[in-house]
Every structure is written in C-alpha cells, then in structure tokens.
Length: 490
Image (cartoon, rainbow, N blue to C red; front, side, top):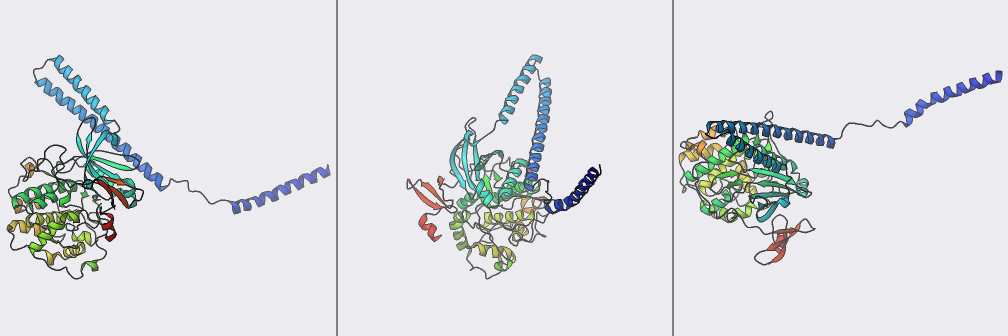
C-alpha cells in the first residue's frame, strides 16, 4: 500500500514538471500570427462586384419606371383618340410584345463575331478604330479595339475606364455616343457612333482658314461639348482638332476621351499628373521648368509658318511625340490644374481656325512647349490676317492665366462674350452646319486617313503590313509604321 502511494505521488510530480515546461516550448515554437483579413486584390474585386450589382439594379429600376411612364402616356393618347376599346387593347398588346423582344435582345451577350469588320479609320498605340457593321441589324458603327496587354504595360487602364464611364454617363448631342462595350481574352471593344464627316484637322487642312462665321459655328459647338462633360465633373485634357469629329450633316461632336479624368469636387482644381501623353504620344513632352526657358526657336514669317504647318500637320498628329500645340501651360508645368485647361485648348483651336496655324507653332515640340509657357511673349496676331476686335479679345481671354481665363467659373462666361452675341445656343445643333462634308453613303470613309491592314508578329516591336500599292508584305515599326530601312534611321 505504501509503495502504491509513493508511485502515485511520483506520477503527479512528473506531470506537474512536464506541464510547467510546455508553455515555454509552445511560446518558443509558436508561429507568427496570420492576418486573416482580405487582401487588396480581394477588396478591389468586392468593390467592383458591388459597383456592378448597384449599376445593374439601378438600370433595371430606371428601365421599369420608364416602361410604366411610356405605358401611361400611350394610354392617355389612346383615350383621347377615336379608337375602340378592342383596338386600344390590341395595340397595347402588340407594343408590349415588341418591348419584350427588345428587352430579350438587350440581354444577348454581344461579341466581336456579331460584327462584320470593315475599313480601318484610325490607329494608335493601344489598337485601332475600324468601321464595322452589325450582322443582325445591318447598322454601321465605329469599333474601337484596344489591346489589353499594351494598356497594362503602359498603365493606361484607369484612363480607358474613365473613357468608358464618361461615354456611358454623358448623354449629349455634342458627344460621340457609346452603344456598348465588351471584351475577350486579348482585346477590349467599344462600339461607338460612326461620324463619316472626318475630323476638324482634315477640314482645316483642306480649307486652310475659316471665316469668323464658320469658326463661330464650330467653336460654339465645341463650347457646348466641353460644357457637357464639365457638368459631369470630367476634364477632357486632350481637346484638339483631331478629336473634333463631323457627322454627315457637318455638326461637330467631341471624341477620344482616353485622357479624360473625373474630378473630385472637394479637391478641384488640384489635378496633377506625372506625365501628359495621349495614346499616340508615348514620350513625355516636358521634364523640368528649366528646359522650357532655354533659348527660343528661330523666328519664321507667317507665310513660312503656314507652309510648314500644312506640310507637317499629318505627320505630327501620328508621330510618337505628337503635337503639344493645344496643351495649357499649367499642364506642361505640372503644378496642378483643373477644368480650365480645356478652355485654353479651345482658344488655341479658335486661333488656328482663323489664322491657319496654332498660336505657338514650331518645328520642334520642345520649342512649342517653351512658347506656351512663355505665352505673354509669343502670343501674337499676324498683321496681314484680318480678325475682328471681338474675336481677338476672346482668344486673348482664353490664352491667359487661369485666374483671368474665361470659363474658369463656368461656360456661361464664354457664351456671354460679345463674339457670340447673335448665336442661338439652344438651336446650334438644329441649324444648317457651316460646312457639309461630301459623304456618298454610310460606309464612305473618304474623309478619313487610309490605313493598311496590320498583322502582328511574335516580336511586339515589329509588325507586318500588307501594302495595297506594292501588293506585298513589308515590315514596319510598331509606333510609327516606317519601313525597315527608315526604322533604322528612326
């Protein structure tokens, strides 16, 4: 009995010792705590899913409300008509059937196979713009095709999202319409309104200068276009003749929102960007303020400026550097800017319409940037060109400091200027256009630059192009399209 008691006491003591040592072992070998919170990628996916669901049900509720309103209006009109009750019911049932078919069509998932791809009417660093026809309806659209890998590589994803959101949000006769968007593994597609009249750049190249009445018409429509996106707190940042398109009747619409950016009203105007380059402009235009204040470029006579501009305009538009002629000085200096930078661009375009060349044109983009920053010295009006005092005053009040610039407090400041004294703003898109482009049919592309079909090879920096003139393939540079021999020099 005594031996059993001693054995039991020894067992209890040994267990106590082992329990005392276990916490130290556990503390020493205990792994670091694991953060069970969601990752940033998961948070982004959740935010995107939330936004998608909210937008989906918001659109559903809006569609339901509109459908009820249409039915109510129809019933009111039928009640006032002399139709019988049976005729009214039959008409309502027929229209309900058509609306149901339309809603079913809207739920159809659209893809690139639903369209017949036609002529290329534009090409940029991320992809191309192509004329296309919907196979089912036969409607003609402009398809903007963007390569995802290039957008990711160049960090342009947010810009593309802003472009799509702006086009979907802003419903205006002054803006190119977006009908739908979809994607596959390699490309993002935007199906947009096709405007066969070409762009303002082509019009200016053909006519060289516009009369003040013609310029007033297109400047007025540009004011309405800029105002429509500013009302939704977007800044365009790339207003230039290349992005002002003409429809079949000659009315102007604003396009290319790849550099547009939504502005937070609480921070406005405090927008700044590390670089300012469009899809075609892949190199930064300005590095430091000191580079802009170096020796000026040699002076040219107005006639020499006009000849050089007409000769180099198309080349500059599609070069890797592009043309900075319409960029505001506060953008070049990277000191923060807001919506007022679009009104500077409007002033530069108005100057070019009347004079025949931009106000700060130079053969070298860097020289143009210097002139823009030092605009007080370089803003001049040729004496041999006739311009009214009102037009000159408006240009000077657009090409000036932000504090004095018209439009900084709203588009109403520009609309109230004496140069627009006789313009009817609410009828500007109903009146006959200043210039009606030559358009044969809905597939006519004569007002656009001709582009050749490109077949990309394994090497991303080289692509093969089928030459219509040579009836053969040749290789070229990805960004400038130069032949191999020219590309070596490039």
